[in-house]
Length: 196
Image 1 (spheres, rainbow, N blue to C red):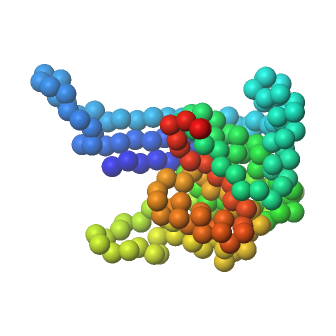
Image 2: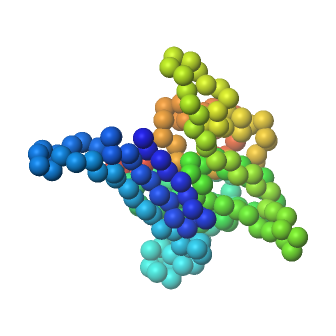
Protein backbone atom coordinates (compact mmCIF):
# COMPACT_ATOMS: atom_id res chain seq x y z
CA UNK A 1 0.00 0.00 0.00
CA UNK A 2 2.56 2.67 0.91
CA UNK A 3 4.73 3.92 -1.90
CA UNK A 4 7.59 6.35 -1.45
CA UNK A 5 9.99 7.70 -4.06
CA UNK A 6 12.36 10.60 -4.52
CA UNK A 7 12.25 12.59 -7.76
CA UNK A 8 15.54 14.14 -8.92
CA UNK A 9 16.60 14.65 -5.29
CA UNK A 10 14.14 17.57 -5.01
CA UNK A 11 10.87 15.97 -3.90
CA UNK A 12 9.91 12.95 -1.85
CA UNK A 13 6.43 11.65 -2.55
CA UNK A 14 4.68 9.20 -0.25
CA UNK A 15 1.21 7.88 -1.06
CA UNK A 16 -1.08 5.29 0.53
CA UNK A 17 -3.81 3.52 -1.46
CA UNK A 18 -7.34 4.44 -0.40
CA UNK A 19 -8.08 0.89 0.77
CA UNK A 20 -5.67 1.43 3.70
CA UNK A 21 -7.50 4.54 4.93
CA UNK A 22 -10.25 4.39 7.53
CA UNK A 23 -13.70 5.16 6.15
CA UNK A 24 -15.85 7.93 7.54
CA UNK A 25 -19.55 7.50 8.31
CA UNK A 26 -22.26 7.88 5.68
CA UNK A 27 -22.73 9.98 3.58
CA UNK A 28 -18.98 10.71 3.61
CA UNK A 29 -17.83 7.12 3.26
CA UNK A 30 -15.86 7.37 0.03
CA UNK A 31 -12.29 6.35 -0.85
CA UNK A 32 -9.57 8.85 -0.03
CA UNK A 33 -5.97 8.36 -1.07
CA UNK A 34 -3.43 9.94 1.31
CA UNK A 35 -0.40 11.65 -0.15
CA UNK A 36 2.48 13.79 1.11
CA UNK A 37 5.01 15.67 -1.01
CA UNK A 38 8.18 16.93 0.70
CA UNK A 39 10.29 19.40 -1.21
CA UNK A 40 14.05 19.51 -0.69
CA UNK A 41 16.41 22.35 -1.42
CA UNK A 42 18.52 22.05 -4.56
CA UNK A 43 21.49 23.49 -2.68
CA UNK A 44 22.70 21.75 0.46
CA UNK A 45 22.81 23.72 3.68
CA UNK A 46 26.25 24.16 5.23
CA UNK A 47 27.44 24.64 8.77
CA UNK A 48 28.03 28.30 7.96
CA UNK A 49 24.37 28.61 6.91
CA UNK A 50 23.28 27.31 10.32
CA UNK A 51 25.60 29.70 12.14
CA UNK A 52 24.48 32.65 9.97
CA UNK A 53 20.85 31.77 10.66
CA UNK A 54 21.49 31.68 14.43
CA UNK A 55 20.58 28.00 14.59
CA UNK A 56 24.05 27.32 16.03
CA UNK A 57 26.64 29.41 17.76
CA UNK A 58 30.06 29.60 16.05
CA UNK A 59 31.50 27.31 18.75
CA UNK A 60 28.77 24.72 18.15
CA UNK A 61 29.47 24.89 14.42
CA UNK A 62 33.19 24.29 14.97
CA UNK A 63 32.42 21.35 17.28
CA UNK A 64 30.09 19.73 14.72
CA UNK A 65 32.69 20.18 11.99
CA UNK A 66 35.21 18.34 14.20
CA UNK A 67 32.73 15.47 14.66
CA UNK A 68 32.70 14.99 10.90
CA UNK A 69 36.48 14.86 10.80
CA UNK A 70 36.82 12.44 13.73
CA UNK A 71 36.27 8.68 13.75
CA UNK A 72 33.09 8.75 15.81
CA UNK A 73 29.80 6.92 15.81
CA UNK A 74 26.89 9.32 16.05
CA UNK A 75 23.17 9.41 15.42
CA UNK A 76 20.85 12.35 14.90
CA UNK A 77 17.63 11.60 16.75
CA UNK A 78 14.34 13.45 16.72
CA UNK A 79 10.83 13.83 15.39
CA UNK A 80 9.78 13.85 11.75
CA UNK A 81 10.85 17.11 10.11
CA UNK A 82 13.18 18.08 12.98
CA UNK A 83 16.25 18.31 10.73
CA UNK A 84 17.95 14.98 11.50
CA UNK A 85 18.98 14.28 7.91
CA UNK A 86 19.92 17.90 7.26
CA UNK A 87 22.23 17.94 10.30
CA UNK A 88 23.74 14.55 9.46
CA UNK A 89 24.34 15.69 5.88
CA UNK A 90 26.18 18.78 7.12
CA UNK A 91 28.31 16.83 9.62
CA UNK A 92 29.10 14.10 7.05
CA UNK A 93 30.06 16.80 4.56
CA UNK A 94 33.05 17.51 6.81
CA UNK A 95 34.39 13.95 6.48
CA UNK A 96 37.78 14.16 4.72
CA UNK A 97 37.53 13.51 0.97
CA UNK A 98 39.98 10.61 1.08
CA UNK A 99 37.83 8.59 3.54
CA UNK A 100 35.85 5.69 2.05
CA UNK A 101 32.12 6.19 2.69
CA UNK A 102 29.28 3.72 2.28
CA UNK A 103 25.76 5.14 2.41
CA UNK A 104 22.70 2.92 2.89
CA UNK A 105 19.43 4.82 2.60
CA UNK A 106 15.67 4.37 2.25
CA UNK A 107 15.04 6.53 0.23
CA UNK A 108 18.20 8.37 -0.85
CA UNK A 109 18.32 11.81 0.74
CA UNK A 110 22.07 12.36 1.09
CA UNK A 111 24.53 12.19 -1.77
CA UNK A 112 28.27 12.71 -1.90
CA UNK A 113 28.89 12.82 -5.62
CA UNK A 114 31.75 15.09 -6.57
CA UNK A 115 32.46 14.74 -10.25
CA UNK A 116 35.46 15.69 -12.34
CA UNK A 117 35.23 17.12 -15.88
CA UNK A 118 34.73 13.59 -17.26
CA UNK A 119 31.80 12.88 -14.92
CA UNK A 120 33.74 10.46 -12.72
CA UNK A 121 32.97 10.51 -9.01
CA UNK A 122 36.10 11.82 -7.28
CA UNK A 123 34.72 11.21 -3.79
CA UNK A 124 35.40 7.75 -2.40
CA UNK A 125 31.72 7.04 -1.72
CA UNK A 126 29.37 4.17 -2.52
CA UNK A 127 25.62 4.87 -2.47
CA UNK A 128 23.15 2.02 -1.84
CA UNK A 129 19.39 2.46 -1.83
CA UNK A 130 16.98 0.01 -0.23
CA UNK A 131 14.72 -1.91 -2.61
CA UNK A 132 12.13 -3.84 -0.63
CA UNK A 133 11.45 -7.30 -2.09
CA UNK A 134 8.33 -9.41 -2.12
CA UNK A 135 8.80 -11.54 0.98
CA UNK A 136 7.03 -14.87 1.21
CA UNK A 137 5.18 -15.58 4.41
CA UNK A 138 7.35 -17.42 6.91
CA UNK A 139 10.41 -17.36 4.61
CA UNK A 140 13.45 -15.24 5.41
CA UNK A 141 14.47 -13.16 2.39
CA UNK A 142 18.24 -12.75 2.31
CA UNK A 143 18.53 -11.71 -1.33
CA UNK A 144 16.46 -8.51 -1.47
CA UNK A 145 18.14 -5.15 -1.04
CA UNK A 146 16.46 -4.50 2.30
CA UNK A 147 18.08 -2.17 4.80
CA UNK A 148 18.91 -5.13 7.02
CA UNK A 149 20.49 -7.16 4.18
CA UNK A 150 22.50 -4.21 2.85
CA UNK A 151 23.70 -3.38 6.37
CA UNK A 152 24.88 -6.98 6.85
CA UNK A 153 27.04 -6.60 3.72
CA UNK A 154 28.64 -3.25 4.56
CA UNK A 155 31.66 -4.75 6.30
CA UNK A 156 32.53 -6.75 3.16
CA UNK A 157 33.00 -3.43 1.34
CA UNK A 158 35.51 -2.24 3.98
CA UNK A 159 34.11 1.26 4.44
CA UNK A 160 35.90 3.61 6.76
CA UNK A 161 32.57 5.19 7.69
CA UNK A 162 29.06 3.83 7.13
CA UNK A 163 26.19 6.31 6.92
CA UNK A 164 22.70 4.95 7.53
CA UNK A 165 19.78 6.99 6.25
CA UNK A 166 17.29 6.24 8.99
CA UNK A 167 17.08 2.98 10.89
CA UNK A 168 13.54 1.83 11.63
CA UNK A 169 13.32 -1.83 12.60
CA UNK A 170 14.77 -4.09 15.26
CA UNK A 171 16.76 -6.03 12.63
CA UNK A 172 18.27 -2.80 11.29
CA UNK A 173 19.35 -1.73 14.76
CA UNK A 174 20.90 -5.17 15.33
CA UNK A 175 22.97 -4.81 12.14
CA UNK A 176 24.07 -1.32 13.18
CA UNK A 177 25.07 -2.63 16.61
CA UNK A 178 27.07 -5.40 14.92
CA UNK A 179 28.94 -2.85 12.77
CA UNK A 180 29.70 -0.66 15.77
CA UNK A 181 30.94 -3.67 17.77
CA UNK A 182 33.36 -4.42 14.92
CA UNK A 183 34.90 -1.00 15.53
CA UNK A 184 33.48 0.66 12.42
CA UNK A 185 32.33 4.29 12.76
CA UNK A 186 28.64 4.58 11.88
CA UNK A 187 26.55 7.71 11.41
CA UNK A 188 22.81 7.76 10.95
CA UNK A 189 19.39 8.95 11.94
CA UNK A 190 16.39 7.46 13.64
CA UNK A 191 13.04 8.68 14.86
CA UNK A 192 12.20 9.29 18.49
CA UNK A 193 9.49 11.19 20.33
CA UNK A 194 12.22 13.51 21.59
CA UNK A 195 16.01 13.62 21.78
CA UNK A 196 16.26 12.81 25.49
